[in-house]
Image (spheres, rainbow, N blue to C red):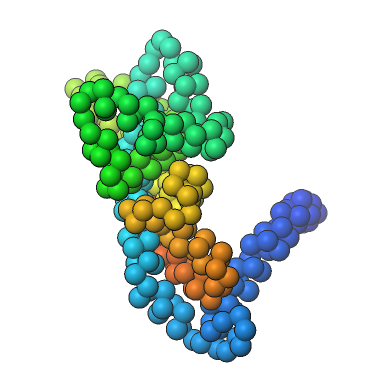
Length: 284
């Protein structure tokens, strides 16, 4: 048994070294830059960089937009993925082409996706022409308040497929006898969902929630390709703020903002794990 454990560690060693070299060490080393005043003198500044970031209007606006984006995309994406997964489970004909159509966004490159949505939502795009033909003004859609809605649509189109795969894997493992027993007892579809589907799908739901939160913070590439490095204030996210600090070689502000984001995401994930444990213990 000990010999097998050594073999396992031998295969894991290259991956562990890669994570240590390219993630852990740079992450810890960035704490040094977050605690110095600048790259020249490199005097110890304590928490001044963190305080400066938290009081920076751009950082506050970026944090507000990021929180709004996550708050919209995560529940909408989970609800839509669960609904589509249940629909696929009930389908008796045409399930295979429906699954293939829903999984297309997983294999399409982000650049192609952004180009498609840019053609649709651009100032000279298809949607503008349709609005003009219908008698509406283009300002109805292209004002800054709608840019966040466009990003939400793009995010859902790209990430719902992944959530469908997770929910589908969870639905497959629920025994059909539970539904048959509930039906014999006179329970309707809604009652069966609450008493069987939702209960046994709770571990998968927390995994989907965890991945959705993480993926919502990885949308910078799509926003950058749609609106550039300096978008309107309505879609200026924390990733934009840190990217602009990097271009300005302001590493203390960049690293302090990165650590603030890391702490915020860690707190959210900790709450998710605690909630998962509480729900799991309640049903055991």
